Amino acid sequence: GAVVSQHPSWVICKSGTSVKIECRSLDFQATTMFWYRQFPKQSLMLMATSNEGSKATYEQGVEKDKFLINHASLTLSTLTVTSAHPEDSSFYICSASLSGDTQYFGPGTRLTVL
Amino acid sequence: QQQVKQSPQSLIVQKGGISIINCAYENTAFDYFPWYQQFPGKGPALLIAIRPDVSEKKEGRFTISFNKSAKQFSLHIMDSQPGDSATYFCAASMTMNYGGATNKLIFGTGTLLAVQP
Image 1 (cartoon, rainbow over the protein chains, first blue to last red):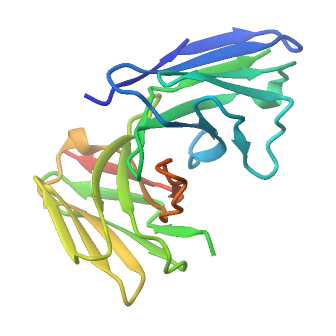
Image 2: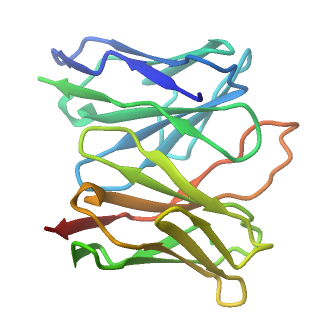
């Protein structure tokens, strides 16, 4: 149980285009979903916290107009990187949770912006 | 302070040996301390977690030792195997009472473990 999927697993796009990443909780309903960003050989950096049906809460320094998060249902959250640039290239990971402390992480999405 | 300090940055252990990774925190409001294992190109997977009301928790070859007074906790991997080679992250969170919503995790910097055969 507690499986979280992400799609796509990797994506390459041209600079200036937008990319959407999906995060799904497959066997449970997630009250909260989180989006993280991880650069090579670094730790996970929380970008935003998303609760179903409400606006996401972004961490300090994360541009909410650039990283659009939608949490339309208890099993799906999406992250859209708008007008992507090479510096947005990173590993994006989501996590999902019913409530409390335990977060279950997705497999990640590798974004490369050319 | 919201930081969680993790050491060492990297660790090499012989097969069958004990791997020990340490973490320290400042904020005494933290009340949940999980450890995650991450393989290259994959998302983190929860290994084991502990709360401050116990000093030790063991699950198979993995043990968390928790020292509340020192504000430190550690992961011990007994009988380390080459398949344990991965990056390990400690984390901490505090109960914020968001009406049932999940608490934010603060991650350590990670430890790259290599278990040599």
